[in-house]
Length: 165
Image (cartoon, rainbow, N blue to C red):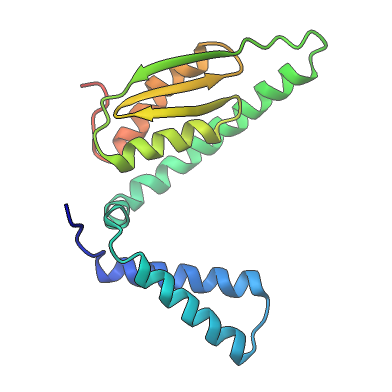
């Protein structure tokens, strides 16, 4: 199924983001370097013009930005839990692999959930098959339940989906 081109604002956003990263990473402000940055940014924008997910993400930007502080807090809490386990002389790890189904529908919501799980220390998304997630947890089954519950609900709210149905 052919995808529709990203809206013009999405292309402008991609170009601007690429160019800003180019300038920040290169650290050079000569005409040649800036010209190459413009060319590279334009090429990336052109090659990614069919990204349907970009338009979807732009529609949900406000909700996604509101989700980020919660995710950051979860990452910090998980870091502290993993550090406690690693520093404990008994090393009380309880590695498990668990599965759960999500009611999330869109590819972007499912991808966001999988990436959020992997960003949280102590858990990693091993596989996603349709709407079934396979998760590895260093600290038992409780983190997997948290991914299937609160995290999936928050991601669902970002994209206007109800993951409970």
